Length: 273
Image 1: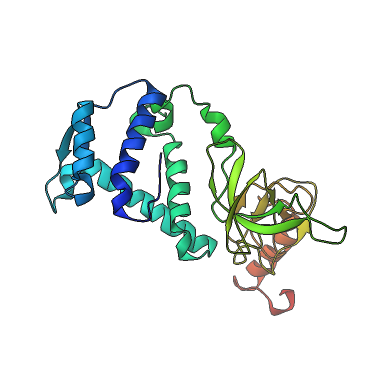
Image 2: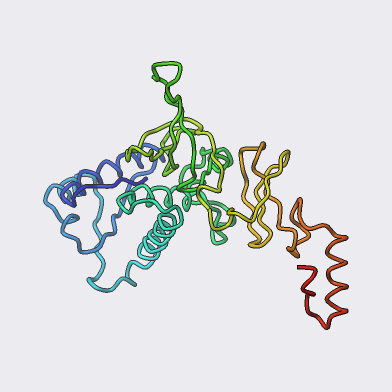
């Protein structure tokens, strides 16, 4: 459970709401609250509610993050994931709350070796259908088309370009950043070609093939699942040495080129380039 707050003054009320929601969802009662020495956690209102609920407040030592190591490392991991997602998707920095929420959602549903191959959500909410939630994973910044249901006119555009930036509490409903610089929600947005998001990998040295499911670029060894079966499988360049790529170099041509190299002292002859 994650909420972005415009100011620290709203932290006490948000924290109490989060404690109440967790107690309702899990059936357990909160006993301890461990925080740093932030002033937002020592307000009179928060301390009064904690005493009324019988929750003990434990504070860490200032400037000693090792006293709260698990929380500090978790925050660092989430911030790193969000930074890399924003840079890779080339989206504006003011979308950092969306990137943080997307990274947290993914991390909480990732299996851990220390948890015997289970994710934190599975242990916290055993009734969660984790496989269904993982099947709805979408990359941050993935280019999509969203449907405009209230379009007027036969010649008016019925869809809009956007980028996935997060999830909602309802399964299959995503948060999408549109070209109008606003975030909206939509159900099952349609995938666009990954050439828009990854021009460095899917640029001018590719050939489009049909009838296969996936995008492969042999020069970088990258394979990404795709939802558009019609025009999404990418072949390799003729001179590539990656024989695993579908539609890649012809075996007969590759053997002939290797033989020519051996005959010319390991160098590729100029007339075969």
